[in-house]
Image (cartoon, rainbow, N blue to C red; front, side, top):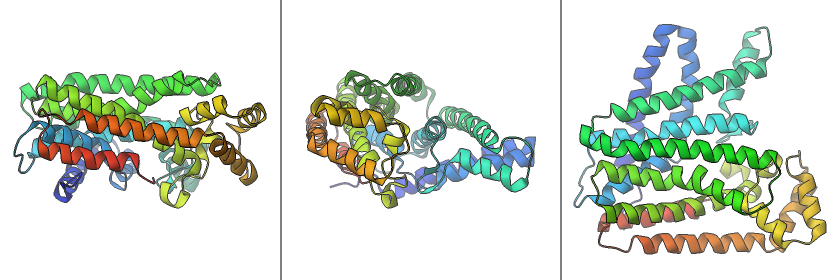
Length: 356
């Protein structure tokens, strides 16, 4: 079976990112060395860790449409690598929205910028400074993503085909994020709201649209695009459901986030909504009372017990399995190349069985 991302392709994605980031940092440093050093926080964040899921899915979309690919062209690698900068923007801003202190086991970008203010002994509110700079760095990542994509070197025809899903993806992820924030503020307990968040904040942006972009770059036919998007929606939703489980039950040493962080942040996940439906009222009242608070170890333990005993966890696990099966069935078609199918199967497993 083919590797989900060949080692050489993974290194080429990272090399493309480093090359683009270095060039953009030179431009920023030309404004002021101090701004260049701030931009270094973004460069380090992008190149120092992460699973590169979006470039991997985009490259899989290209491979699924092209027979006997051999080595993927440099310009396609560069175009697909640009997705990692959109991910950087989303994560930097998401960590501000969630008031997160850590990401991948390290301080978040806004906390790192805050620490620079404290270390320098500057006047004013260090926390506000860190947040302000991180918002701007996230915006910078989004700008650099567009630059990297449109200057990747792919043909004008390929770029024209891929821009529609590229722009749609950005609108969908921002809309999904806005709905997520709304759900937390309004204390939503229905299942329809988190399902929509999963569909657009995660599934479209993580899997479906990257696959669509890769296929568009390859000039894939409509049957190929349809199969890939069906696969992408299902795997993307399963990916988020796995994330919901890890947000409560994940090992901090593996996830790089504090245990039970989703509860503390007030995340209105499908896992929580399912428990609200299945659990006895006393347990529902307890969950409603602790979500969005600094839960202690005992409260976290009880919340986990409720999620398990109510049947919510096993229900979500079953949904992950069903979505994965649906995704794999979608690519059982001659419209997908054999190499592409093998790669997609590996990526489906990586996305839905992960521990971080």
